[in-house]
Image (cartoon, rainbow, N blue to C red):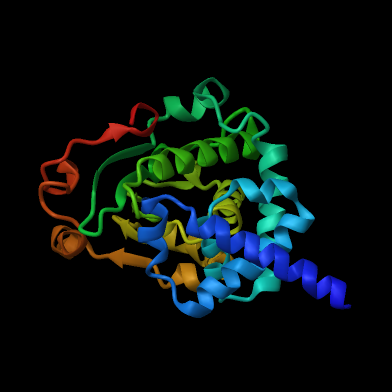
Length: 265
């Protein structure tokens, strides 16, 4: 028992040394952690590194995101994180998704990114009416979702961990009603990219879409639900301007920033 405690203490000391040797960018972001968070980051790192050595390759910010997603419960966050590592090795064995793997989804032209909001979070716009099930099925769409999320994460400035999304539902119909795809993308976002979504504005939502939304809503975790805002058409620009400066607001919503296809960003 004493030996086990000694080994754990040793792992915690090592984690502390790694944290202290982190880059300034890493330190800047971690300074917003509470002391309980810092303690649990060390505990979780010590635990997951014994279960999966590849855990050593991730920084404390990723550990913190998984902890926050599970309300700082080390056991639950560790299980979630280890599941993520296993999924990543299986689903993205090369470490990235090539555009050639998702050519059909890219051709639909349904996701764009450009500009940042007032907090420095990159902005993405997704057009639901441009999404259709393709010949590669749900797995093909999941690869597209991972590709898009990785692109967004790569655009985050130093110290920022989240993005802002605008889901534009204008023109959406039954042909776009890919419930399996929607639920799969929700699972990827919540289970494998926790604490990455900062806010989601849903705009131009037709009545028909709300029927499908009622099916999806129960699968959304409570933390994510708090980040979703349905915007009335009459208040669209004013609501977006609360979070986004006009120079960064997409031009299709009355701002000055042209949208760029996510694969070109």
